[in-house]
Image 1 (cartoon, rainbow, N blue to C red):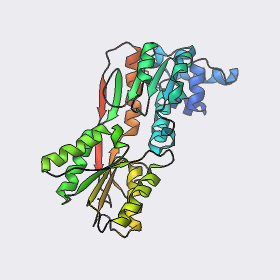
Image 2 (image 1 turned 180 degrees about the vertical axis):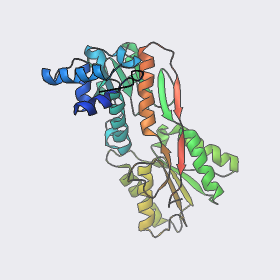
Image 3 (image 1 turned 90 degrees about the vertical axis):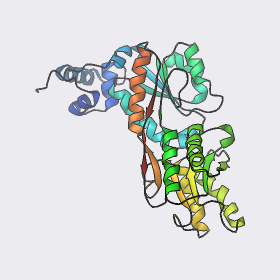
Length: 325
């Protein structure tokens, strides 16, 4: 087998050559159980032949619990959302690529994380979230996927995206634009709200808000149940566009509008955020690069492990125009 010696192999390439999973390669390289000795030796031989060199982050995670990264979700319902399922998948792949072993932690298991993992990535921030504070107190390096604050963090550029989206709707002639989000009184989407409000203020237009109640089952169903009775009671809706905090909320709004005979986008435009596969097939939305967020999370984790100064990275979002707006 020939290879350019100037380029180190990745774990994905080793797995492909060995005909095994990325997780199996990670176990072999980190001396983890779960493999036969014959398979372990074959994987190690291939890695040597392919000149595998772990990244700086992977070198920090070389043995024992130090090789484990805890992925901690927020509130208990967060794992039900397609966005978090996709993000978790991309994080798992990005960590395996660097020789790290991801394990799952619920938000209320933070106290036990330092006993089982050498670092952490925190998802799904919520009001009163103290996970970062507790990990810092335990000396566990971590990265937050969320807005700037203490420590390392990465997030999509929500605010600028919602400025873009709201300006786009204003430019298309909409003048009664409402924002729809979950539990707005708890400030779950401050950058998105701020972007929406900024664009309306620039145009001299009034703000309108619809705050959906918390529901553990489905954001789409919650949005539908919220708007269906209101649409039945109104002579006409008090808005000509709905800027929704997520694609899931937007889908519920679309279903309610359709059931009440309101044409989209002719009478009411509807937009989302995330650009989730399948869910956003016809939806005008803001696309965030989930794979880039996952990759940057692992890069920042390497910086945290190396003792570098904390920083925040903002990932650009893209306006995607489709049928609903």
